Image 1 (spheres, rainbow, N blue to C red):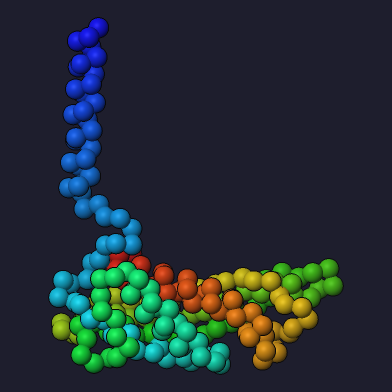
Image 2: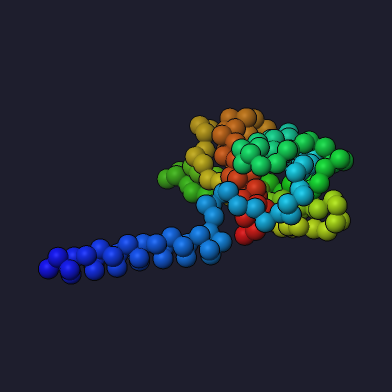
Length: 183
């Protein structure tokens, strides 16, 4: 009985060691901590994106969120310039649309869907090649309509700034993760 427990204990110990060794040798990395970018890239330029929409100041909000997300990863120096950097991230917001997503019993929109489309590119400035790009990345955020405001009302976005805040945070997180983790 004692011998059987010793053999079982030894087997479990060896199995545990094999699991640890195989996990460390397979390239496993914690999500959000890896990077496929060349080692010489230390400075990434993220100038203000281009805004082809009528949503005021959207380009500034998105650019700041992307810079903050990169800074939060802690590995790169992020600059708002396009010169003197190892890599350059450029973006262009191509469209923003607002459509009713659901209606109340009076057939008035009770929920809206905000959809943002952009073109993003990361270029290695040293090798002059594109490291990552997505010409039509799309984000969608739904939210409840505010009391009596029409989607055509210019104050619409000011009344639900949270929708733009949420979509810009999701945008930044997704873009930076895709770039750093090569998904």
